[in-house]
Image (cartoon, rainbow, N blue to C red; front, side, top):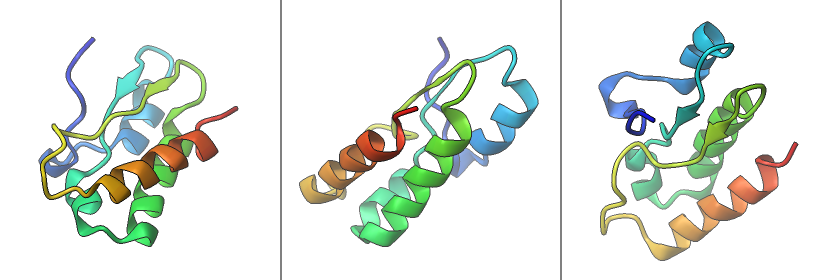
Length: 90
């Protein structure tokens, strides 16, 4: 397994999944910069769009694009986990 896809490096699981879905399972790519905003709407847009695009076929492992820094509040992290539960089910 490779490390989590880093969004800030220009990687986008939505594009990569379209190109390599038949061969790879991806992990990560949830932008920690978005998580750090604390904005529930932005966090939902980030998590939902990437999770829905990546979860089919070979699957997807939810993870941020980097380690979670102190700038991400517990509430933001908890919200992201709720979104994974909501949108991650098939």
